[in-house]
Image (tube, rainbow, N blue to C red; front, side, top):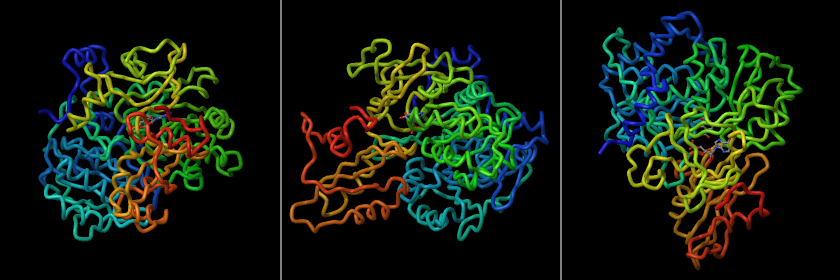
Length: 544
Ligand code: AMP
Ligand code: DBH
């Protein structure tokens, strides 16, 4: 049984023949760029003091670290959980792993013991890469606990003080030349899905398919060697990585500027100093930038394009961005599983502010179907199904889930409800999947429900998204207590989730105690009913 289904031969041939898959690998691309323009700046890391690496430096660092990783026994196909903030070492480590042929597993800095323990165990990771501390959190201590319980985990590499582990800077940098070169149709890494189930799913992406999405994104966004892309969101997330992101910028020979924090107080001075031309952000952050732009003393005039996506961007907010920041807006509706839609630079203004764009590729197949799987009439709402040259055919080691998440003929069921305009642009109208989108951060209610159910006083729980002006949605946990159980306070429920060691954004914003949930016809808890109790009908973007 392979780890994940891949494209059937006929499709793979077609994507190669069309020139989408060109046999490039990430390691190879970096070598080529370093040979073509060794002295251009690849990466700028401003904190705590400014560092900048040219393409030659990044290439050499990646090769030497790859040799060091290989000497430590890290082999082609091995999984390595990478949990680093937006620092230059992130780029160095992932290119070193690409060169070894090992697969980075992209954890977010916010992940805690529950998620990291799961990623390490499920992927049988051999190594885990962390900062010593980040945002006040001790990652070394977390790594020690995870290492203790994960037999496959042989190495913890730490950026900074390693405690009982190995400092990344002390991995011996033997001369390059010994490393393995992966094939372009090999897996390059495992990306994370926001998910709808109790545990996050892993998304297997190949060099060929991901590089195609970068090339397509670059063309649409106008990324070239002069682009200076500011990485505001966590670099491990698919959006700032590939839409067009820091990997898009590096593919084009441009510069990735890593931002330690996305707030205007940190980011605006960087835009000015580094002459940033492009960035991407989620809608709540776009609101903050839109508010802060007009009064700022910083010179934002280098900024040409801001991409907004990850959650629905309201039309009213979208109309305000361009005048506030003095640059162009592009909406992006994407997913780590593949399909990415962009509005285009030559779209009229109304299209840019009212739609979430159209697919990158003429070979992206998009179907809009009703609940019975039949095509909806042109212009109607439907479930979005998709397949194409950079959309996965299945999650990694999840054969059972794959039978539900994909159709028999290989379309990914996105769980999004969309409508298509006459120009082929998609408008996201809602969601059929059981997921909460909290300002672009995806939460699987089931994961949080399982934790709360572990409390002895809790009889049942349902976690739902409720409308929120700023985040789009925030989370509300409805809790039914056991008869005669000790009463609980909302803070105790929140503490329970936090203390379980999950990312802070998953802790319910609100907790309400109820006698019983509304039931549907088949006796299952009706989340729709719960949402409409919590918010006036029509204000919540989900549909079931
Ligand atoms: P994931 O599969 O975890 O990468 O999350 C992707 C999901 O984020 C999509 O399936 C949508 O539900 C949501 N999403 C991303 N971009 C947008 C957008 N511009 N508007 C609305 N929803 C979005
Ligand atoms: O939300 C996402 O996952 C997302 C949004 C915009 C994404 O993966 C992308 C662009 O590539």
